[in-house]
Amino acid sequence: MPLKLVFLGRLEDVAGAPDREVAGADSIEGVLAALEPELAAALREPRIRLAVNGVLLAGGDAPALSHGDEIAFLPPVSGG
Amino acid sequence: MDAGASDVRLLTESFDPAAALGAFTDAHRAAGGVVGFIGQVRAGDGVEALELRHYDPITLPAMCDLAGRVRARWALDGLLIVHRTGVMHPGDPIVLVAAAARHRRDAFAAADFAMDHLKSESWFWKREKAHGAWRWIEPRAEDFEDIRRWG
Image (cartoon, each protein chain N blue to C red):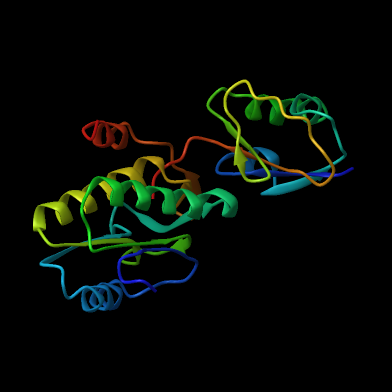
């Protein structure tokens, strides 16, 4: 049950690529726990917003993940 | 396209803002005034290139949502928002906002509001290349101050 992670902005540099496929997990926390500690710490910063399948999560949302979900990590936007 | 609808575009290639503004003005002959704003990559400061990244599922939908908020707030005949994504160079256009209205004050205010919100809220991540090295740009406090004046 692979998941796709998408890293926007400077998170791409931390992850080493703009996106990555990872093994399935039931929750966001499960995804983060399986990543390198440095990347997981960057993704856990409070200013990072998350979107699952293009829908922004509100603070405190902990959605159940399913096969093929795309999870995007969105740092503060820097303006057009 | 319905002449009264908003035209919102996210472009991966360069565009001609003067031609787009001309076509928009032609399409809104009943409007007494058209206000257009063009943002371009600043030359100087040693910046060789600028790149905007976006996220397909949310960037354009949020721009369309902004257009809806502008239309709800001011009486406009038309609204055009064109925004680049990708790599740009000094002098390249980044954004064009144009508002057509019966009365000029609505057009000025709508374009100003749209630009302030595009700058501070739209889903773009920016990096600059200077002296051969890319650097991600963090949000600017001024952009949040600009947006606060709208209440």
